[in-house]
Image (cartoon, rainbow, N blue to C red; front, side, top):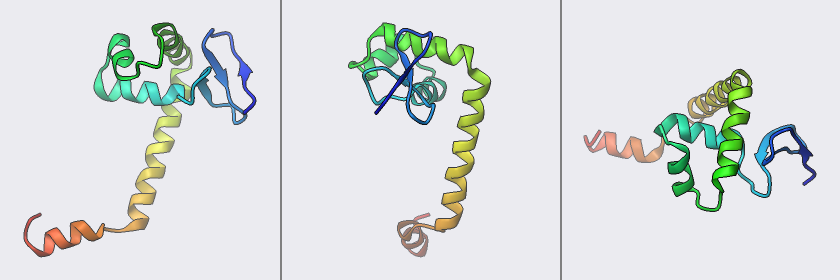
Length: 104
């Protein structure tokens, strides 16, 4: 997978222009979503992903800080897509069974 270097030491863009942590398959947006969802500090991110260095994490957070609007738009787009898939798939068979047994 060809990568394009950026001005961030540990961040590269893949062939689709998606920011990834160089040398890994971790997308910057994945790290950002975890940080937002769980309120993790960089040290907690490192604890949860020990294969990442603190330098990589801080570089990803710097990239996020400089591209926050773009990344937030991408997060919103992804959430809309997931909701669309959820609506298209209908209720899960498990939920239907639990409701029929009065467990939900």
